[in-house]
Image 1 (tube, rainbow, N blue to C red):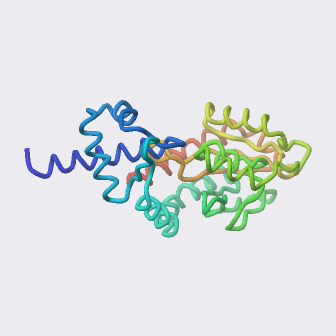
Image 2: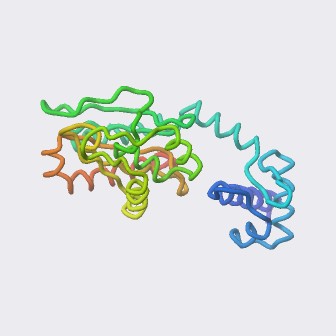
Image 3: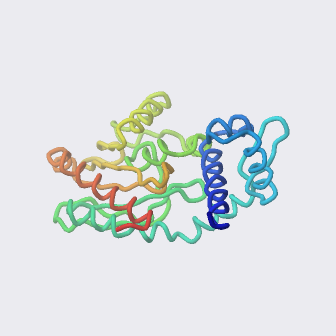
Length: 254
């Protein structure tokens, strides 16, 4: 075995540990992490000490460990550079081409949901393309519901605390319990719909774009409701195909 192989193994273990810790809403103890990663407890203690020294983790006395400032800096740079979302633009264009409907992509930006890519339909009767930038009323949009359903619990709570569940149309979900139920159903189905919940005669279908199980963006197609209802099965097949394309682009495949 070459000297690089043990080092590579250590990097993989450290990355796996950070991903596990990132998935949890609160701190984790060494014993809990050892069980989750199926790593001997002494090795887990050593790994945690190294990650704390690097600033990747912070030790909270008896509570355990949570992500540290170095991870925060990486996250900020990741969002500011926006490179992963530029990589995903072909998948949005593909979705618009195969459905001939307005398609767009949204992502979290500093606690807000923003439209980052949009492609208009070429049909005479169509949904107008969305402007780039912040998108309000997430509870009334298919894309917003995907972003909320797959968000970290704290991020979802902060967003809903700052954004009341206003009734935009008679179909809008404006009850917290009803919204929570729908978000749970979205996680089970893997997609969200907006059936005239934000605008009359506009319906939308949205799916998550994931990397290692973590939400990167939401991919959405919008159409006039009459056409949406007739073509729903076709739209669902198309958006699943574009989701697969987007996730392959994230992994470096085509």
